[in-house]
Length: 119
Image (cartoon, rainbow, N blue to C red; front, side, top):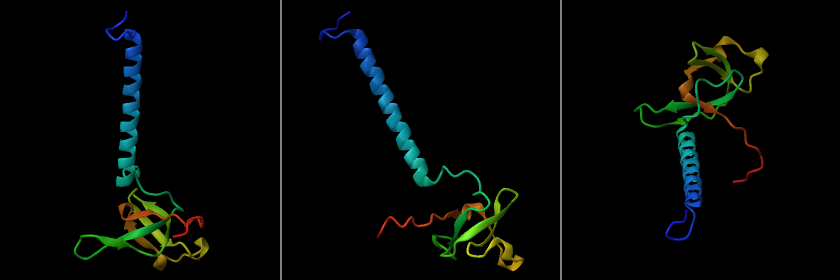
């Protein structure tokens, strides 16, 4: 079967299918980027041993900043509370007074500088 422009109906359908597939792929990639920037990929607390930094909200409850101290996750309590210790302290030298507790939503992973990027 030929349409008015002389193309076969099947070739048009194949082109439409390919366009639909490309559009769907682009939409999925866009959604993934949005989820990544919103931080929705993170599910649950970081694993024990992970280096993290802690967010400290300001007193008005709006905004705040990340602590400069890098912590290591020692333990996870009831799946939500993290026991943290300064990452510089060797594991065998940790004493109870050094441990800080916080909800896992208040931390984000700390990524060590790779040394390859100069600002």
